[in-house]
Amino acid sequence: MRNPWAQTGNYRTSYVQDTTIFANYREIVSVVLLLVGLCILPLFLERSQVLVLNFILIYAIAVLGLNITTGYAGLISVGQAAFMGVGAYTVALSAPSLPFWLTIPLGGFTAAIIGFIVGIPSLRVKHLYLALATLAFQEIFVWVVGRSPALAQGAAIPVEMRNFLGLEIGFRNHNYFWYYVILFVLVLMVMAWRNLLRGKYGRALIAVRDNDRAADAMGMDPGRTKLMAFALGAFYGGVAGGLLAYMQRAVVVEEFTLSRSVALLAMAIVGGLGTVVGSLLGPAFIEFLRLYMERLSEWMKSNAFIQSITPAGVDVASALLPLSFGLVIVLFLIFEPRGLYNWWRLLRSYFRTWPFRY
Image (cartoon, rainbow, N blue to C red; front, side, top):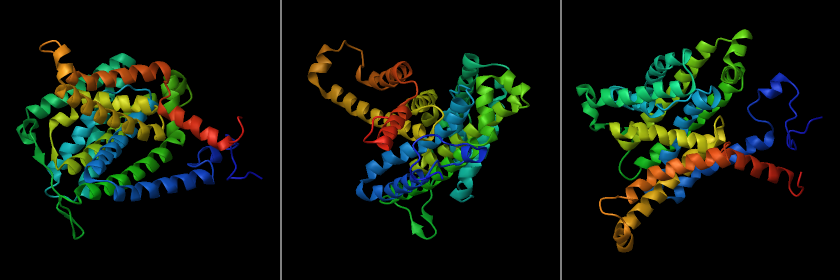
């Protein structure tokens, strides 16, 4: 009889076992302990530190969507930030008349519709050409927002929510309140992600990614599968954008530019494409890298020796952040293409078989 506590490998011998969300009871216990730890973590942190956690969790939701489009379906998207922007501006326009638990899904569905339309070129082009199509959408989004009076021409649009079920949301508890809301939404999105991709749709995505002609010959519809991948990835991005709008109390177009899309793609690559754990580790790694680079830049600008050896008119400190992003992507693609998830897998395997080496 199979022991659900002592399983050390993949012993799944049926389709039902293969589609289970958790391999054994230890995974369930680990997830519960992780959630408990995340729930009590803000109690030991300052407001600014909780704000960093909020950004990480929001980007994790967006990267989950990007992992559907790029990680599973193999469709390179450089426009995830634009889908976040669609969700954020939908929330900003609907927040005065609707509660947040309606505006956030509305932002996701609006982004999904746009994502379905943007995914139409994937029916004809692949790889680099598809990436250029999503890049064009990213730039078109910024251009349209910057010239639309209804969207304040890219200027800040306030998004306020001062109370919830009698709870006053002010300066002191704003970050803490939205931390728990974002964490709750993230858990729902992860469960939906796992539940969707462990079944036949996830297998269809992988089949279309590997060989769309063979998938078509097996009875799958590659075109519909690709369009649904874009729509689902955009839905996750729209939800993340709506949460970002409420968390920052305003929407500005500078938050949804090409640099943000590149950062989200870097998070997906660094974390590990097509994995839930990678969708959490990647945003955490990149966000902490960004904070460290910003502090290093400030130190370089205030250091007299660094300024004396820097050529006139050259701002080396400001170039550190994009340089570090590009360098991290290249290094991970060369030395660890499976991302931080592979490190997590090796670490988990080590403790699973400890004290033995096999």
